[in-house]
Length: 324
Image (cartoon, rainbow, N blue to C red):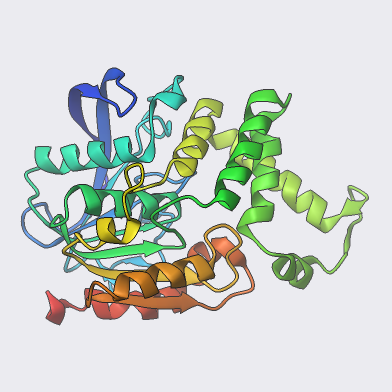
């Protein structure tokens, strides 16, 4: 299984804001060698990276030998969003970029790797939003589009929370820690917290266990994530939108030639199930090959990183080798 971090040079890329930048688009490959098997592109979420499977893979319960996405039958490709810091590259002028720019960079990377069509693009949260954007920019780029706990646009609720995150990141004396603690309230639910902590006390710290858990997550991210990367990813999340000006969102999405498999989480407070259901209902009116599935969980948005058994059952039929 090849997991070496590799680079694609991209010169003079012009962003949607008109800025020009040259960069190295980094990626990893897992499973079968490139050009010898169908390719699955995995788009990572806000604090994720290209290390999607194997020993340290953040989706290793879903992707691997004999898993729902079987590395015995597929080539797994994952790009790093430029500026996420996993490859050492950072972007200070984060407002120069939007999600559409990242989708364009990923498509440029596919072209450089001589990949004409993917078997699937799958991504959660921010990664799902970028997947929607890629499929709009190139309607034939994949056979299967699988956005999970995501949507094709950022709602007012999401934009509002990204604004609060930005204020933490730009104004706090402990920005990564404080922003992450706030974010965990959006990624989980009251029921999830109540079920896990039940107002119990951390006797060593003499604070509630929920407080020590939040502090732990803040410190944990602080150790592995750069401030400029967090600012960029938060800004990209806010910018998810496949439409142009007053263009109809459904007419935009209907141009996608892929089979679309929308997966939501019933308790998601970030990309709500209701919003995903509405996307499905409106899209189904103009497109036959669209499906909707729902993960049942008390854990909210993060269920796509927790409820692996449910998620595997939802996507397994898409990746059975007989369907290739």
